[in-house]
Amino acid sequence: MSGSGFDNFNTDFYQSSYSVDDQGQPTGYGYSNTEDPYKQGQYGQYDYSQPAAYGTPGVMQPQTPYTGQIYQPTPAFSPSPAQSMYSSSFDDEPPLLEELGINFDHIWQKTLTVLHPMKAADGNIMNETDLAGPMVFCLAFGATLLLTGKIQFGYVYGISAIGCLGMYCLLNLMSMTGVSFGCVASVLGYCLLPMILLASFGVIFSLQGMLGIIIAATIIGWCSFSASKIFISALAMDGQQLLVAYPCALLYGVFALISVF
Image (cartoon, rainbow, N blue to C red; front, top):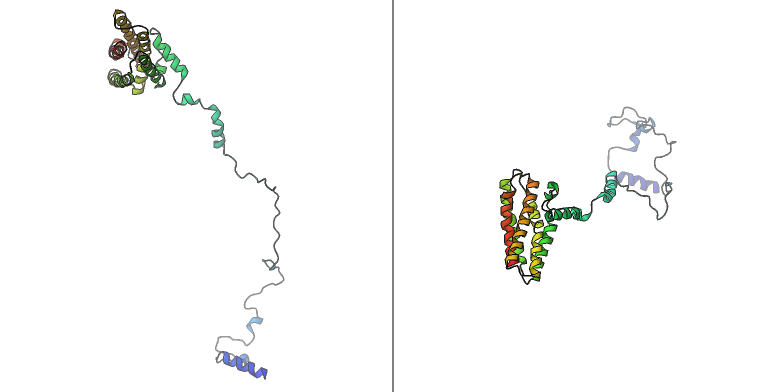
């Protein structure tokens, strides 16, 4: 009974013209022989004696043991030669003040050049744009005037800026090489140092007299001569010192008027 039910299930599952009884006869599917094609190895031979490429399911493959140390990782980054050179170059860098353009040796040499009018000026040093010394001298000049009861800081800086602009235009017209505005401001600011002495004399005694006029005229000539000497040495303007000294004397004359009156 169970066998008859199975036969009915096979015949009812898929209706086709192929039956089990027709296995020994050729059919219209293009097979020329009646033998089982699986017995002739039409689908190739496979050697089951070779081990499979994959492992047995459920079994873990052996892993490579870890040879490092716990909490001590192996360094994975090594600095390049360029970075090593950059890190070691900090020892060879100049001081911070020198990088900012503040060189106390050059400031001292420029100050001595101004205080000694007959001393030859070094054109390489004087051609530098150093504004640290001029700012200090302008501040000292205004502070000295303040001791005499004159609050003239605005006039000092205003006249200095206008005078530097005028000398900058004049020297660029007279010289062949040209000059920068910073160089002009640096030289005129350093040469303001004798004017501080005039303001200091005004603290001790009054300059509104013959003695004050003589001292003021001497200080004006000192400042203008030092400035013109530096300009002609830095710009190679030989034989033109008097032409440069005249506008410088006009500028320092205004500062002398502020000091006297």
